[in-house]
Length: 423
Ligand code: AMP
Ligand code: GLY
Image 1: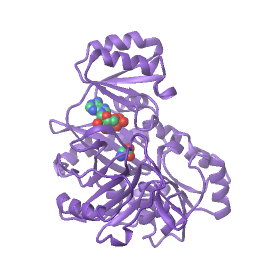
Image 2: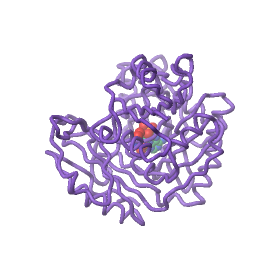
Image 3: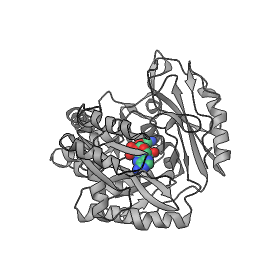
Image 4: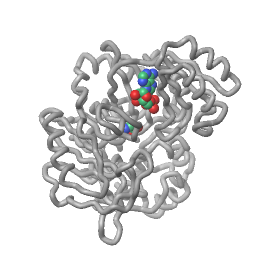
């Protein structure tokens, strides 16, 4: 099987690494990839949303399977682009149709889906520029903190949590009237604040059957003790220690089953991953958000724990036969520590040489923002490298992730040293 993975981050390097362990692949490409994927696959200089170029490449190389990493191409309809074109409709695409991707592409749609299928989530109302004044009055009826969410994709920046009512009203106006997040904030969902601890559950589905993959917790803030600006994720731990069997049972019955059942009854073409962001409040799970792809850096701890053949899992997903496989999971804990460029998530420099790869022991280095330049590996993004390791518990695993993180160097490298502080 010839496989093309779309994306360029730590998530895609991890997919490539796991696919490369399968007996079922013959050739692997990553578009556009990074310096890490170049070591195990062939990088192709194609943008993830350039559907025409992707089609041409798929035809030229006789690609059998397309694994879509990030949300953008899914929300823009890459799956439908393939299924509707007889020349490429035979390709197995891992990722939902445009209708499925709306679960991530529109917060309002996600809330309506949850309401329709009785999936526990925060109470909400949504507003547009026309209903701005009603929105402000609605805020007055709520208790702080106030949660404002841009309806559309806003590169992870579209959620504001504010303590002050006047500030919240002002931000609502900035989002709706001044288009703070462009078209993404033409509509805003205001929701009840849920106070609890977060975790993520990953599900692979063929639209009818599902497999629950390992849970993970990521650390989104740049600063230790969960302070400072939000990032794409500074590290992750899998499994989540507080997600015991009884709690997982609640998640499966109240959230995973009705979600997959909802996809089925609404006849949504969905063959791919569902990333369910959850919050545990008084021992009860609530959905914070759906993503229609794997998480990054969660993938860097979830996939290493899957012992089953990933290509076979994806093949069965595409064929609608996910019930025909059994999933083997490593019982150990996996952790990953993200090494980032100084300044991230604000302005940072690129092109810094990375050294120390030869000193890595008992850990796996997944590249995120890296590229090859004149025979050297240099930084090429805010999140640069994820260092994943295993242990009997998260403390042991983290110790190894940190030992190895300390072996790698680049100018102005930063990482959080307190992962797991809240567990
Ligand atoms: P999202 O982009 O929907 O994941 O939201 C970003 C972050 O905002 C989440 O990871 C939570 O930490 C926080 N958040 C979102 N919605 C709520 C809510 N209703 N209550 C409390 N925190 C929330
Ligand atoms: N780590 C969060 C995400 O992938 O959205």
